[in-house]
Image (cartoon, rainbow, N blue to C red):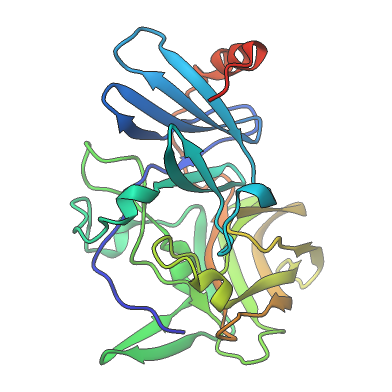
Length: 302
């Protein structure tokens, strides 16, 4: 696995939503036009607004992780008003990236902090694994440690910043095992839960090819701290937050790799993030619920 080290971050708002709540993400399309990515009843929606008008909802477009809107690298995308966006959602989490802004990504993130307290661990107290991979790139040792899986999101230190920031510099966890099967991940949650969320594979929004070039999880088994099986789970081979429902609430979880999707270039199995479904807390905003219903009734799509 090779990845050029970058000093850039990409700034995004991260949202968490329950089945009954709706949360928005802001991104400016043009003068007075605002676009929001929302989750409502576990479905994703893009909402377009004219900020110069009161109640100026212009359109909505429902999104889904289906084969018609996923590129050759496994990343979902959508076009809005002639502009392309990549998005990752599922399990109540959602992020989106303006494709045009990715071309100008070499800027230092002004919200960057430099302490261990900068990360939102998303409900995970501790995380470890049976092994991890290291490599040397340009005289620098890169360690793909288990802790990388809970350093995906940053807590900003500015009130003017988004609630949470996608950590562009974060690497995934990578197993140091050519067979990959039998590798284990050990998780301790802050609060007991019967749901966890996994961002599978090597997810790099700028170098999207790394997702398919490296191996990623296909099938896993999950156990409690007494090694009683909670469930098995099979991943789709796309970039998404995968929701895994457990048989009961637990505080400690062991994940065992049963099967992988083999990488086209490298055999390293990667996982980008593991999250508690309720790990991110943001203010609820259900103000768009009636608007979505009305827009769907009128059929006013983009």
